[in-house]
Length: 285
Image (cartoon, rainbow, N blue to C red; front, side, top):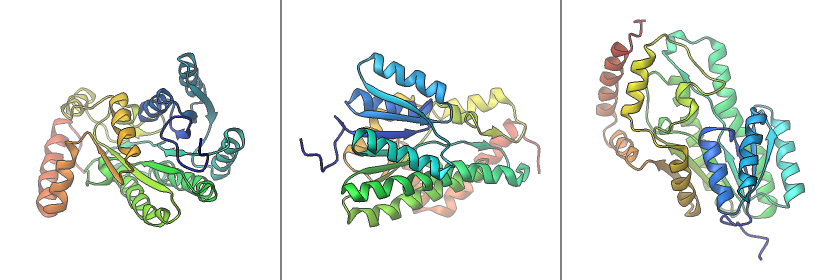
């Protein structure tokens, strides 16, 4: 076997952050099913260990690791330990993230700093740690999880959209540089996926009071897919080295609309936001 090229996915080594639940868990399990050795990195280490145990019980290769993605030195240690143990790093999924749902007028400065630390600085830390290893190897694939909110403006998710737009810009720009060294970079932009982040995530929050039942109905109208469906489609696109991966496909329509007619899109989005705010009984600012 050629040890100096990317393995897709059999016998590959992958680190997945935020893999105790949601999209990260779906990716980790799908990678293991395809023969990869997976490191499940998460602040919820007990839950990550349960997922890893389940993978191993099905014959897969997985281990859990405690990781705070906002701590660069901890991230770097994890990458170095992975390479020392497994001999390589084929895939790095910078997937950990939180959501803050509510009006920007209700934010405290701490809310901004928290989501920037996890959603953006966490990705930067992963890139800084993993990219250098991949450059030395001469191969590797970095996949950063953004969101459809990284391609479209979204009222009520201002800080989340800001971080995810930044992740898209980071990923597409790094892809240009990395290609010369044989390194792949992709950005994953899911639409609605049934994960804890719909409620802010384990470490996020909802900052504006709103009717929970109506919020749930509005969320279900978006027809969220399961993390398992997302993972299957994502790994297929990653194997093809797609730059920007939008799943489910139907969310591309909104992205095309915004790129072709941005002013019209913004007007439509504003009307929808105001109508939804009324349904949710959100106080006016």
